[in-house]
Amino acid sequence: MGNMSAPAATIESAIMTALATVDDPEIRKPITELGMVRSVAVDAAGVADIGILLTVAGCPLRDKLTTDVTAAVSAVPGISAVRVDFGVMSQEQRQTLQQSLRGAAGPEPVIPFAQPDSRTRVYAVASGKGGVGKSSVTVNLGAALAAQGLSVGIVDADIYGHSVPRMLGASDRPTRVEDMIMPPQAHGVKVISIGMFTAGNAAVVWRGPMLHRALQQFLADVYWGDLDVLLLDLPPGTGDVAISLAQLLPTAEIIVVTTPQAAAAEVAERAGAIALQTHQRLVGVVENMSWLELPTGERMEVFGSGGGATVSESLTRVIGASVPLLGQIPLDTRVREAGDVGRPIVLSDPSAPAAAAMIEVAKRLSVRRESLVGKPLGLSPRR
Image (cartoon, rainbow, N blue to C red; front, side):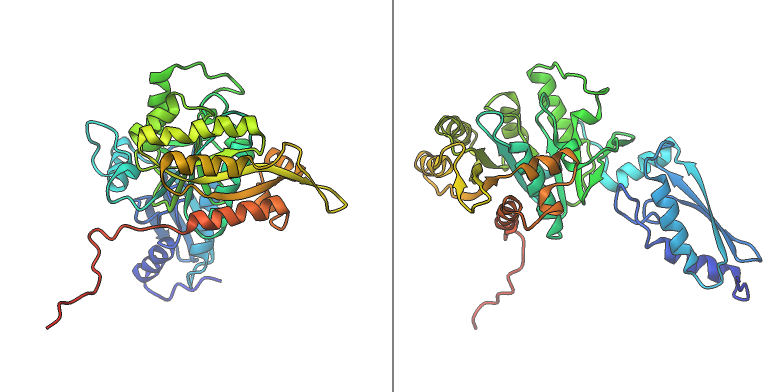
Protein backbone atom coordinates (compact mmCIF):
# COMPACT_ATOMS: atom_id res chain seq x y z
CA MET A 1 0.00 0.00 0.00
CA GLY A 2 1.13 3.55 -0.62
CA ASN A 3 2.31 5.66 2.26
CA MET A 4 1.69 9.35 1.63
CA SER A 5 2.95 10.57 5.01
CA ALA A 6 5.90 12.25 3.27
CA PRO A 7 5.27 15.68 1.71
CA ALA A 8 4.10 15.51 -1.92
CA ALA A 9 6.99 17.68 -3.04
CA THR A 10 9.47 15.25 -1.50
CA ILE A 11 7.89 12.24 -3.22
CA GLU A 12 7.75 14.05 -6.57
CA SER A 13 11.40 14.97 -6.19
CA ALA A 14 12.19 11.31 -5.54
CA ILE A 15 10.21 10.37 -8.64
CA MET A 16 12.21 12.81 -10.77
CA THR A 17 15.39 11.28 -9.40
CA ALA A 18 14.09 7.85 -10.37
CA LEU A 19 13.11 9.06 -13.84
CA ALA A 20 16.65 10.36 -14.33
CA THR A 21 17.73 6.70 -14.44
CA VAL A 22 15.45 6.00 -17.42
CA ASP A 23 17.11 6.44 -20.81
CA ASP A 24 15.28 7.11 -24.03
CA PRO A 25 15.70 3.79 -25.91
CA GLU A 26 16.76 5.51 -29.14
CA ILE A 27 18.85 8.46 -27.96
CA ARG A 28 20.31 6.63 -24.92
CA LYS A 29 20.19 9.66 -22.67
CA PRO A 30 18.02 10.24 -19.54
CA ILE A 31 14.49 11.34 -20.37
CA THR A 32 14.76 14.08 -17.75
CA GLU A 33 17.79 15.51 -19.56
CA LEU A 34 15.93 15.39 -22.89
CA GLY A 35 12.93 17.34 -21.63
CA MET A 36 10.60 14.37 -22.10
CA VAL A 37 9.03 14.46 -18.62
CA ARG A 38 5.94 16.63 -18.98
CA SER A 39 4.40 16.19 -15.54
CA VAL A 40 4.57 14.26 -12.28
CA ALA A 41 1.65 13.96 -9.87
CA VAL A 42 0.88 11.66 -6.94
CA ASP A 43 -2.56 11.26 -5.36
CA ALA A 44 -3.44 10.41 -1.74
CA ALA A 45 -3.47 6.66 -2.50
CA GLY A 46 0.11 6.75 -3.79
CA VAL A 47 -0.82 6.46 -7.47
CA ALA A 48 1.72 8.29 -9.61
CA ASP A 49 0.64 9.86 -12.89
CA ILE A 50 3.64 10.44 -15.15
CA GLY A 51 3.31 12.53 -18.30
CA ILE A 52 5.90 11.69 -20.95
CA LEU A 53 6.46 13.56 -24.21
CA LEU A 54 7.43 11.40 -27.16
CA THR A 55 9.64 12.86 -29.87
CA VAL A 56 7.15 11.66 -32.52
CA ALA A 57 3.64 10.25 -32.28
CA GLY A 58 4.57 6.88 -33.78
CA CYS A 59 7.53 6.22 -31.49
CA PRO A 60 8.38 2.53 -32.11
CA LEU A 61 9.72 2.02 -28.57
CA ARG A 62 6.74 3.40 -26.66
CA ASP A 63 6.14 0.10 -24.86
CA LYS A 64 9.78 -0.02 -23.76
CA LEU A 65 9.43 3.48 -22.27
CA THR A 66 6.26 2.48 -20.46
CA THR A 67 7.96 -0.53 -18.90
CA ASP A 68 11.09 1.38 -17.87
CA VAL A 69 9.22 4.36 -16.42
CA THR A 70 6.84 2.11 -14.51
CA ALA A 71 9.69 0.06 -13.03
CA ALA A 72 11.68 3.13 -11.99
CA VAL A 73 8.79 4.98 -10.37
CA SER A 74 7.37 1.87 -8.68
CA ALA A 75 10.61 1.56 -6.73
CA VAL A 76 10.04 4.93 -5.04
CA PRO A 77 8.82 4.48 -1.43
CA GLY A 78 5.16 5.44 -1.05
CA ILE A 79 4.14 4.64 -4.65
CA SER A 80 1.39 2.06 -4.99
CA ALA A 81 0.79 2.22 -8.75
CA VAL A 82 2.05 4.04 -11.84
CA ARG A 83 0.09 5.40 -14.77
CA VAL A 84 2.01 6.66 -17.81
CA ASP A 85 0.34 9.14 -20.11
CA PHE A 86 2.01 9.98 -23.42
CA GLY A 87 1.96 13.20 -25.33
CA VAL A 88 3.98 14.43 -28.30
CA MET A 89 6.60 17.16 -28.38
CA SER A 90 5.77 20.36 -30.20
CA GLN A 91 7.93 21.50 -33.08
CA GLU A 92 9.62 24.02 -30.79
CA GLN A 93 10.38 21.31 -28.23
CA ARG A 94 11.83 19.04 -30.92
CA GLN A 95 14.01 21.88 -32.21
CA THR A 96 15.25 22.50 -28.67
CA LEU A 97 16.02 18.80 -28.32
CA GLN A 98 17.89 18.78 -31.63
CA GLN A 99 19.99 21.77 -30.62
CA SER A 100 20.83 20.22 -27.27
CA LEU A 101 22.00 17.03 -28.98
CA ARG A 102 23.64 18.36 -32.13
CA GLY A 103 24.13 22.09 -31.58
CA ALA A 104 22.83 24.75 -33.92
CA ALA A 105 22.67 23.60 -37.51
CA GLY A 106 25.21 25.15 -39.87
CA PRO A 107 24.85 25.89 -43.58
CA GLU A 108 26.19 22.42 -44.46
CA PRO A 109 25.52 19.15 -42.64
CA VAL A 110 28.29 18.42 -40.17
CA ILE A 111 29.73 14.91 -40.12
CA PRO A 112 30.89 14.38 -36.52
CA PHE A 113 33.33 11.60 -37.48
CA ALA A 114 35.21 13.95 -39.81
CA GLN A 115 35.92 16.50 -37.07
CA PRO A 116 39.48 16.77 -35.69
CA ASP A 117 38.32 15.98 -32.15
CA SER A 118 36.37 12.84 -33.10
CA ARG A 119 37.41 9.79 -31.09
CA THR A 120 35.41 7.37 -33.24
CA ARG A 121 37.42 4.80 -35.15
CA VAL A 122 35.91 4.52 -38.65
CA TYR A 123 36.43 1.31 -40.63
CA ALA A 124 35.28 0.99 -44.25
CA VAL A 125 34.88 -2.66 -45.20
CA ALA A 126 35.63 -3.02 -48.92
CA SER A 127 35.96 -5.75 -51.50
CA GLY A 128 36.93 -5.88 -55.14
CA LYS A 129 33.97 -8.04 -56.15
CA GLY A 130 30.68 -9.24 -54.77
CA GLY A 131 30.06 -12.61 -53.19
CA VAL A 132 33.09 -12.66 -50.87
CA GLY A 133 31.01 -12.26 -47.69
CA LYS A 134 31.85 -8.61 -47.01
CA SER A 135 28.47 -7.85 -45.40
CA SER A 136 28.63 -10.96 -43.21
CA VAL A 137 32.07 -9.91 -42.03
CA THR A 138 30.88 -6.36 -41.34
CA VAL A 139 27.84 -7.45 -39.34
CA ASN A 140 29.75 -10.01 -37.28
CA LEU A 141 32.59 -7.59 -36.56
CA GLY A 142 30.05 -5.00 -35.41
CA ALA A 143 28.26 -7.47 -33.13
CA ALA A 144 31.56 -8.77 -31.74
CA LEU A 145 32.82 -5.25 -31.00
CA ALA A 146 29.53 -4.37 -29.26
CA ALA A 147 29.79 -7.57 -27.21
CA GLN A 148 33.20 -6.32 -26.03
CA GLY A 149 31.44 -3.31 -24.52
CA LEU A 150 32.13 -0.79 -27.29
CA SER A 151 29.54 1.60 -28.70
CA VAL A 152 29.18 0.57 -32.35
CA GLY A 153 27.35 1.83 -35.42
CA ILE A 154 27.05 0.35 -38.92
CA VAL A 155 26.29 2.27 -42.11
CA ASP A 156 24.99 0.00 -44.86
CA ALA A 157 26.64 1.96 -47.67
CA ASP A 158 25.96 -0.76 -50.24
CA ILE A 159 23.01 1.21 -51.59
CA TYR A 160 22.12 -1.20 -54.39
CA GLY A 161 22.80 -4.45 -52.52
CA HIS A 162 21.79 -3.51 -48.96
CA SER A 163 21.55 -6.54 -46.68
CA VAL A 164 22.84 -5.44 -43.27
CA PRO A 165 19.44 -4.94 -41.54
CA ARG A 166 18.36 -8.53 -42.20
CA MET A 167 21.71 -10.01 -41.18
CA LEU A 168 21.76 -7.94 -37.99
CA GLY A 169 18.09 -8.54 -37.18
CA ALA A 170 17.24 -4.82 -37.29
CA SER A 171 13.56 -4.76 -38.23
CA ASP A 172 12.55 -1.37 -36.80
CA ARG A 173 12.28 1.79 -38.88
CA PRO A 174 14.29 4.94 -38.15
CA THR A 175 12.54 7.74 -36.25
CA ARG A 176 12.84 11.33 -37.48
CA VAL A 177 13.11 14.21 -34.99
CA GLU A 178 13.19 17.46 -36.96
CA ASP A 179 16.33 17.14 -39.10
CA MET A 180 17.74 14.22 -37.12
CA ILE A 181 17.26 10.52 -37.81
CA MET A 182 17.35 8.11 -34.88
CA PRO A 183 18.86 4.80 -36.06
CA PRO A 184 17.34 1.49 -35.00
CA GLN A 185 19.44 -0.86 -32.88
CA ALA A 186 19.95 -4.59 -32.80
CA HIS A 187 22.27 -6.56 -30.50
CA GLY A 188 23.62 -3.27 -29.16
CA VAL A 189 24.58 -1.99 -32.63
CA LYS A 190 23.06 1.12 -34.19
CA VAL A 191 22.42 0.71 -37.90
CA ILE A 192 21.16 2.70 -40.87
CA SER A 193 20.43 1.45 -44.38
CA ILE A 194 18.62 2.67 -47.47
CA GLY A 195 16.50 -0.46 -47.12
CA MET A 196 14.84 1.17 -44.10
CA PHE A 197 13.47 3.92 -46.33
CA THR A 198 12.24 1.92 -49.33
CA ALA A 199 8.94 0.10 -49.71
CA GLY A 200 9.28 -3.66 -49.50
CA ASN A 201 12.16 -4.98 -51.58
CA ALA A 202 12.12 -2.12 -54.08
CA ALA A 203 15.25 -1.57 -56.15
CA VAL A 204 17.25 1.64 -55.73
CA VAL A 205 18.07 3.20 -59.11
CA TRP A 206 20.39 6.12 -58.41
CA ARG A 207 23.42 7.66 -60.03
CA GLY A 208 26.52 9.25 -58.47
CA PRO A 209 25.15 12.50 -56.97
CA MET A 210 22.25 10.68 -55.28
CA LEU A 211 24.60 8.07 -53.85
CA HIS A 212 26.86 10.81 -52.47
CA ARG A 213 23.92 12.60 -50.87
CA ALA A 214 22.59 9.38 -49.30
CA LEU A 215 25.96 8.61 -47.73
CA GLN A 216 26.25 12.20 -46.52
CA GLN A 217 22.83 11.97 -44.86
CA PHE A 218 23.68 8.67 -43.20
CA LEU A 219 26.77 10.27 -41.68
CA ALA A 220 25.50 13.77 -40.87
CA ASP A 221 21.74 13.56 -40.32
CA VAL A 222 21.68 10.36 -38.27
CA TYR A 223 22.15 10.91 -34.54
CA TRP A 224 24.81 8.32 -33.69
CA GLY A 225 25.75 9.60 -30.24
CA ASP A 226 29.22 8.85 -28.92
CA LEU A 227 30.50 5.89 -30.92
CA ASP A 228 33.72 4.02 -30.31
CA VAL A 229 33.59 2.36 -33.72
CA LEU A 230 31.70 3.07 -36.95
CA LEU A 231 31.72 0.39 -39.64
CA LEU A 232 30.72 1.08 -43.24
CA ASP A 233 29.72 -1.81 -45.48
CA LEU A 234 30.82 -0.52 -48.89
CA PRO A 235 29.58 -1.79 -52.24
CA PRO A 236 32.08 -3.94 -54.13
CA GLY A 237 34.56 -2.20 -56.40
CA THR A 238 36.00 1.29 -56.56
CA GLY A 239 33.01 3.32 -57.75
CA ASP A 240 31.05 6.35 -56.61
CA VAL A 241 30.54 5.37 -52.96
CA ALA A 242 34.24 4.66 -52.37
CA ILE A 243 35.09 8.08 -53.85
CA SER A 244 32.40 9.83 -51.80
CA LEU A 245 33.67 8.12 -48.65
CA ALA A 246 37.16 9.47 -49.25
CA GLN A 247 35.72 12.97 -49.62
CA LEU A 248 33.36 12.82 -46.63
CA LEU A 249 35.54 10.77 -44.26
CA PRO A 250 39.16 11.09 -45.33
CA THR A 251 40.36 9.56 -42.04
CA ALA A 252 38.36 6.36 -42.53
CA GLU A 253 40.51 3.22 -42.46
CA ILE A 254 39.98 0.49 -45.01
CA ILE A 255 39.59 -3.25 -44.40
CA VAL A 256 39.76 -5.40 -47.55
CA VAL A 257 37.78 -8.65 -47.66
CA THR A 258 38.72 -11.37 -50.13
CA THR A 259 38.48 -15.11 -50.59
CA PRO A 260 41.46 -17.42 -51.14
CA GLN A 261 40.64 -17.62 -54.87
CA ALA A 262 43.33 -16.07 -57.09
CA ALA A 263 40.81 -14.20 -59.25
CA ALA A 264 39.14 -12.68 -56.18
CA ALA A 265 42.52 -11.74 -54.73
CA GLU A 266 43.52 -9.86 -57.89
CA VAL A 267 40.34 -7.80 -57.78
CA ALA A 268 40.74 -7.20 -54.03
CA GLU A 269 44.21 -5.79 -54.63
CA ARG A 270 42.69 -3.14 -56.90
CA ALA A 271 40.09 -2.27 -54.27
CA GLY A 272 42.80 -1.84 -51.65
CA ALA A 273 45.13 0.11 -53.91
CA ILE A 274 42.56 2.93 -54.16
CA ALA A 275 43.95 3.99 -50.77
CA LEU A 276 46.98 5.33 -52.64
CA GLN A 277 44.75 7.81 -54.46
CA THR A 278 42.53 8.69 -51.52
CA HIS A 279 45.38 8.79 -48.97
CA GLN A 280 43.43 6.58 -46.56
CA ARG A 281 45.02 4.01 -44.28
CA LEU A 282 44.70 0.31 -45.02
CA VAL A 283 44.12 -1.55 -41.75
CA GLY A 284 44.52 -5.02 -43.19
CA VAL A 285 43.02 -7.90 -45.11
CA VAL A 286 40.41 -10.44 -44.01
CA GLU A 287 40.32 -13.72 -45.91
CA ASN A 288 36.81 -15.16 -45.85
CA MET A 289 35.72 -18.71 -46.77
CA SER A 290 39.29 -19.87 -46.24
CA TRP A 291 38.48 -23.58 -45.95
CA LEU A 292 35.72 -26.00 -45.07
CA GLU A 293 36.27 -28.12 -42.00
CA LEU A 294 35.16 -31.70 -42.69
CA PRO A 295 33.74 -34.08 -40.05
CA THR A 296 37.02 -36.00 -40.25
CA GLY A 297 38.93 -32.94 -39.10
CA GLU A 298 40.47 -32.34 -42.50
CA ARG A 299 40.25 -29.03 -44.30
CA MET A 300 38.84 -28.77 -47.80
CA GLU A 301 40.10 -25.64 -49.56
CA VAL A 302 37.00 -25.03 -51.65
CA PHE A 303 38.23 -21.74 -53.13
CA GLY A 304 41.94 -22.52 -53.21
CA SER A 305 44.43 -21.06 -50.79
CA GLY A 306 46.71 -18.12 -50.21
CA GLY A 307 44.53 -15.32 -51.58
CA GLY A 308 44.50 -13.32 -48.35
CA ALA A 309 48.27 -13.56 -47.89
CA THR A 310 48.79 -12.59 -51.53
CA VAL A 311 46.63 -9.48 -51.16
CA SER A 312 48.37 -8.57 -47.89
CA GLU A 313 51.85 -8.89 -49.40
CA SER A 314 50.91 -7.08 -52.60
CA LEU A 315 49.27 -4.14 -50.85
CA THR A 316 52.19 -3.88 -48.43
CA ARG A 317 54.51 -3.46 -51.42
CA VAL A 318 52.22 -1.01 -53.23
CA ILE A 319 51.39 1.12 -50.18
CA GLY A 320 54.84 1.00 -48.68
CA ALA A 321 53.46 0.24 -45.22
CA SER A 322 52.41 -2.94 -43.44
CA VAL A 323 48.99 -4.24 -44.50
CA PRO A 324 48.60 -7.36 -42.33
CA LEU A 325 46.39 -10.37 -42.84
CA LEU A 326 43.99 -9.79 -39.95
CA GLY A 327 42.42 -13.23 -39.99
CA GLN A 328 41.19 -16.22 -41.97
CA ILE A 329 37.55 -17.16 -41.58
CA PRO A 330 36.50 -20.74 -42.36
CA LEU A 331 33.55 -21.51 -44.61
CA ASP A 332 30.63 -22.47 -42.36
CA THR A 333 26.95 -22.83 -43.24
CA ARG A 334 26.10 -21.56 -39.74
CA VAL A 335 27.32 -18.09 -40.73
CA ARG A 336 24.68 -17.98 -43.45
CA GLU A 337 22.00 -19.47 -41.23
CA ALA A 338 22.71 -16.96 -38.45
CA GLY A 339 22.55 -14.07 -40.94
CA ASP A 340 19.24 -15.26 -42.34
CA VAL A 341 17.62 -15.17 -38.89
CA GLY A 342 19.26 -11.89 -37.87
CA ARG A 343 21.48 -13.19 -35.08
CA PRO A 344 25.17 -13.03 -36.06
CA ILE A 345 27.16 -16.19 -35.44
CA VAL A 346 29.56 -14.37 -33.08
CA LEU A 347 26.54 -14.14 -30.74
CA SER A 348 24.56 -17.27 -31.57
CA ASP A 349 27.51 -19.68 -31.64
CA PRO A 350 30.69 -17.88 -30.53
CA SER A 351 32.65 -21.12 -30.17
CA ALA A 352 32.22 -22.00 -33.87
CA PRO A 353 35.55 -21.70 -35.74
CA ALA A 354 34.21 -19.00 -38.07
CA ALA A 355 32.84 -17.00 -35.12
CA ALA A 356 36.06 -17.37 -33.14
CA ALA A 357 38.06 -16.10 -36.12
CA MET A 358 35.87 -13.00 -36.48
CA ILE A 359 35.97 -12.33 -32.75
CA GLU A 360 39.77 -12.36 -32.93
CA VAL A 361 39.71 -9.86 -35.81
CA ALA A 362 37.36 -7.66 -33.77
CA LYS A 363 39.77 -7.77 -30.84
CA ARG A 364 42.57 -6.55 -33.08
CA LEU A 365 40.39 -3.71 -34.37
CA SER A 366 39.28 -2.66 -30.88
CA VAL A 367 42.82 -1.71 -29.88
CA ARG A 368 42.48 1.94 -30.78
CA ARG A 369 45.16 4.54 -31.21
CA GLU A 370 44.19 7.84 -29.59
CA SER A 371 45.66 11.19 -30.50
CA LEU A 372 47.69 12.95 -27.83
CA VAL A 373 46.84 16.39 -29.22
CA GLY A 374 45.59 18.64 -26.43
CA LYS A 375 46.00 16.00 -23.72
CA PRO A 376 48.06 16.75 -20.61
CA LEU A 377 50.87 14.24 -20.22
CA GLY A 378 51.62 14.99 -16.57
CA LEU A 379 55.14 16.12 -17.36
CA SER A 380 56.98 18.89 -15.56
CA PRO A 381 60.29 20.53 -16.45
CA ARG A 382 63.42 19.45 -14.59
CA ARG A 383 64.65 21.95 -12.07
